[in-house]
Image (cartoon, rainbow, N blue to C red; front, side, top):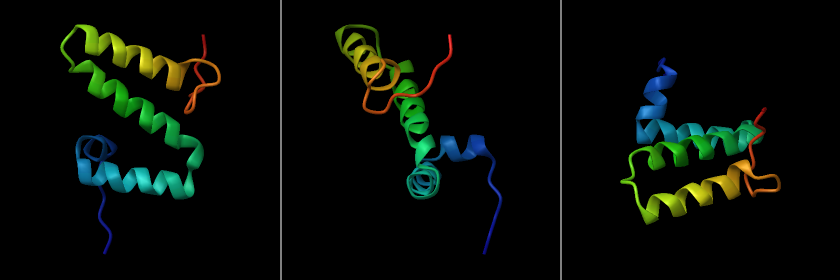
Length: 77
């Protein structure tokens, strides 16, 4: 049984997002860091400003943006 779901629905539904993450890990591993980056930024967007948000921003930068990060995503200038 197959059904179609829009990408926005996938990103907005934790069950679909989990399935999509598993698919990426298995079939499109090069896109996994992008999804992890997106998820962390979405969590950061709703954090109250303060020390915890600053710490999270630094963690996102070091893991996804900084050259040599564990899950660095290619960003253009």
